Image (tube, rainbow, N blue to C red; front, side, top):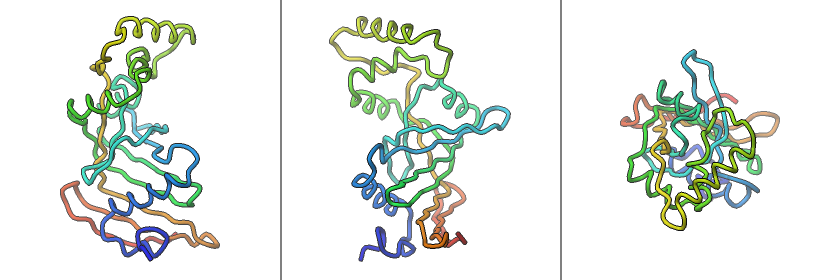
Length: 204
């Protein structure tokens, strides 16, 4: 039995392999967006905000998502470069929580991911003034048409206000549903992203 999947996951000694295993299982069972995660940031007053984003990259260095830097979350991350994220896979009755400092990905990494997106999504990144008031749906459609005309059939470059952010977790908690609300919870902690992980079991 694989201790990283349906068996005793408490044997895992580091969290990234365990996360990868759970994500692969979620890809086979979740009907939509197994890489969807609830991202939480805070504004200048310390008021939290949460929204769903897609995980678009992962490695032992951290978890990457992309956004407009002029959006609400982009501005909040500029002011307080820390975030928390939650993956909830209802089909598996599992969830993973993580939190840590946030940094921007390199321009080369952002360029490569942007060019991997569908052309219409790249046009949309130019047309959408994310999080700002929109006078009408027609105004958005007009902006999309304008940028589609501007870029013609050639390459659509990455907008300067669009990039990726990487959460380097210092905390990762794995939760698995248990009978009678007696769930399994294992947490991995480290003081900084450069430190080794420690592991502990938590009461449900």
